[in-house]
Length: 335
Image 1 (cartoon, rainbow, N blue to C red):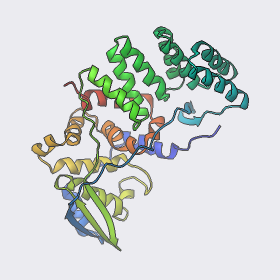
Image 2: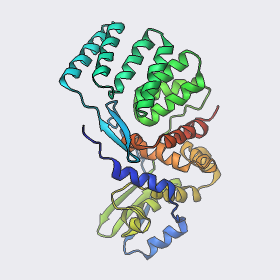
Image 3: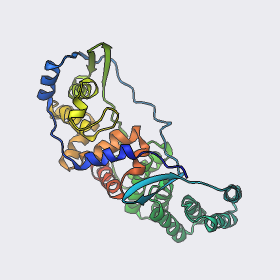
Image 4: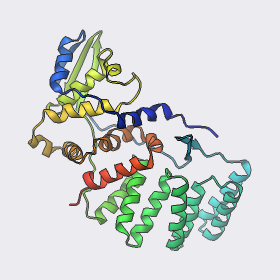
């Protein structure tokens, strides 16, 4: 089995979730820039920054995780030649719509290796297609209990719940699936449908800072930003280029820091008025997340997971549940 080496990153994430760091406001950032050996050139951004293409940033249902010595570890599934052949037979039968025989093949796989939890999801699918919803729920639930990060089990369980009229349960499961695979377009479509069914906001905005920060010469940084994004851009430029600043704030050069995002967001929200906030859903949601005490959840869902979806596989269930609550209560509030 090949271990997925994400632990160095995720330890930092969890560390930043529980350790409070004194944050700087815009006035502090200005002072740092004024005293710096670096020359920061400020300019208004004239063109729109396009949303990044994240179509290739997807998670796949080929991993499972377990707790070892109190640490979450993620592994790739490993198939023997024999199991691979049985599984291929099952897939062939499934595509031929012979769901009973396909299920029998999947059960044979589990007899050979009970840790191939994604095969439990396939079994649930066969029951779901046959409209045996009770058995489908049983198998999806079994999968989730064994391997919480199986986003397909959450997704298909949500489909069953919406079919049988359990709208709240469907919403919980589809949001968790979306957290576990943030950029999957088909999953997003399912999420939107279930949000509509629950009469909730479906505005699909993206956190997309309107700024560019470039090193144009030695010790010379050009910061261009739309007026409303200026506070965020200035703080971000200091984090990116000010010598020793990241380390002073408790982060290394290469890691993604929650403290960095919190400080940049603080500088963003501190210098824009209520009218500007109302015009931008990302600002309104940010303000509401602060009011609800869900700023960490906002940062993960809106900023980190779109660029690093694999990080979701290393988050504790309790924090994934917190993000789910943020999506439902703050981002997707009732219309």
